[in-house]
Amino acid sequence: MKRYLPAFTLLLLVVATLGSLAIGATHIDAFWKELFNPGHNAILWQIRFPRVIAALLVGAALAVAGLMAQGACNNALAEPSIVGTSAGASLATVIAILFGIVQVGSLGAIAFGVVGAIAATALTFKLASVRSGLSSFALIIVGIAVTATLSAIVGISTTMVTRADARSISFWNFGSLSLITTDNLLGIFITAVIGIALAYSIAPDLDRLSLGDATAFHLGVDVAKVRKLALVALSIAAGGAVSTVGTIAFLGLAAPHIARFIYGPSHRFLVIQSSIIGALLLVIADTLARTIAQPNELPIGLVTSLIGAPILIALVALRNTTWKTP
Image (cartoon, rainbow, N blue to C red; front, top):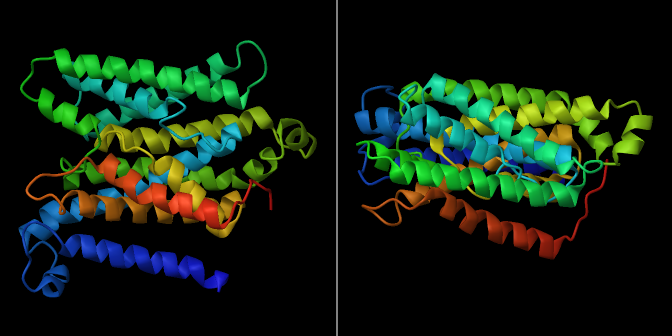
C-alpha cells in the first residue's frame, strides 16, 4: 500500500489544482472547454491560472525551505519563519519597495528578498554559535529574536509610510496571492527550481548530518560546507517566495514533517515529497481563503495553519516517529 502513496499524493495535487482553477467568486461556464482553450477566458487565464501556478511554486519552495532548515539545524522546530529567513526577505523587499527601487513581485524584488534571506539566516547562525558550537536550543531562541526584531522593523516601516500603495504592501506582507500576475511567475519559478535542485543535490549528506556533526565528519562529510549549502538553498527558495507573496505561516514546518511521517527520513525522497505536499497544502488553502468568506479574502497563513496543524497532530498521535536516518 505504501508504494502507491506517492502516486496518490500526486493525484490529489492534480485534483486540487483543477478544483482551484474551477472554483471562485465568478462561475466559469463550460470550464473544461475553456481549460483547453488557453487565453480565451480572461478570468481563468489572467486571474486564476497565474495565482494557482504561484501557489504550486510557493508551496513547494516553502516546504523544501523548511526541510533544509530542519536538516541544516538538525532540529525538528526549524523553519524559515523561525530562523529569521522569512523576516529577512520581507525586510529587504519592503525597504526596496518603499525606496522605489523595485515593485512587488518583480525580479528585482525577488533578488532583494533572496539577499535579505541569506543575510538574516547567516546572522541567526552566527549569533547562535558565538559562545560555542552551534546549539539547536540557541539557534531557535536566537532565530525567534532575530525574526521578532526584523518583523517589528517591517511593521513599523509599513505603518509609518504614507504612500498610496502602503496598504497593498501591508496586505502583501501578511501573505497573499491576490497580487500575483503572469509577470510574477518567472521569478518564483527560477528561485523555486534553483532552491529545490540545490536541496536535492545535498540530500544524501543531510542524511549523514542527522547523525550528528562528529559522526557525519567521520563519514566523510564536509559539515560546514553542507550546512552552508543547505542555508543557501533555504534562503533562495524562501526568499523568492516571501518577496513575492509575503510570509505564509506554518507551511515550512508542517509540510516536511507530514512527508517525513508518511515516507520516512531519506532527504532525497523528502525533497520531492515535501515539495508536492507543500504545493498541495497551499493550493487548497488558497482556494479556501478566496472562497469561504466571499467577497472578503482570508489571510492565507491562517488557512494553512488550520489545514496543516490538525494533519500534523493526527500523524504524531497515530505514529510517534522520531527522526531516524535511513
